[in-house]
Image 1 (cartoon, rainbow, N blue to C red):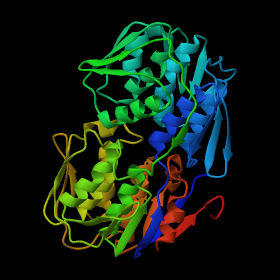
Image 2 (cartoon, rainbow, N blue to C red):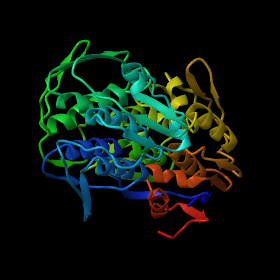
Image 3 (cartoon, helix red, strand yellow):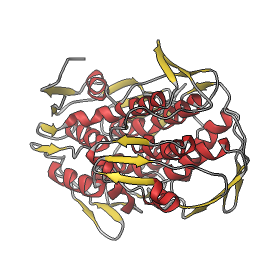
Image 4 (cartoon, one colour):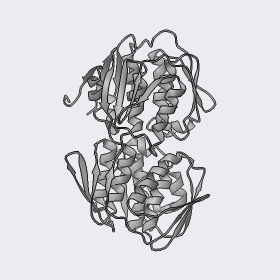
Length: 424
């Protein structure tokens, strides 16, 4: 149910348990669903995107159930034809990971999706599979047979197309070769390789792509899911504007791309320490910096917010891919921050944040543009504004973080949900 959120100026402080990594959950669920036996995934955290992946594996014949804080999955090494359309909601990961696996089944599968996802590109797969993919409004029909061989994929738009092929090709009878051109977000491919290897799948990395032996089988396993640096990033940035916030559990070593937030905070002069099982930031007068977000597009909102409240100029470079997210994230970031009273602009594949001496003014209503990360950026900015800020269509946070506003309240946020279906 749609709802808005009114946030008054607040002081945030405390410790927060960060949800498990959504990226790792997607991958672990798919690997478990392709295994012949039960697998345990923990901790588990439900969101719209993760539910989309669970809906999909169930349609292909796997079964799941939530047990306390974990997820039990009974997989099937041979997936069956879905009997009805699979609703992947707005989850690009779910759709892009599942398309090659649907072609592995070799029977017709129909994916339905939200309008925002229907607008996001699938051209790398269309080039690979041609008429096996066809669009009908907000539906995608997949009908064909994936065969072993050589594949060449342009990964300029997203690393998710690489991951989708890596999930499926090992299950073919013979070996395949995946040539990769212009790969982006390599750390996300590393997460896929980590999950595959934990499930007994062998992938050989080569200079121009991957050699993939055929006739492999996924094996059962226990998947321990790390805390999500993508979600932690905004809380850690917020801690620089408030007395201090600790996020846990967060690993010291990880393949998660968004661990880069730690380096960016240090580059800004921010106070950050490694705690027993996480990280804590505390109030700091930060300085502008330059950050390349080509491999970490989800860090654009927290880094833009950090730049907006820092001395001197901040420049985020390599941002053009942000136009292909849940919203045109360049436009959403620049417009939202300017309306809050910051000085933001976009030019030449960069977002520029100018130094702002007075605090953010607030006192506005801002539509979240159906983008969960934009809604969360606005929320943290609102806590330090002079006047209350209303986030319109704030329910979009449920895509990745349904408890976000509850957790913001727990840290001291003055949050009023308007039109909410229930009180957490």
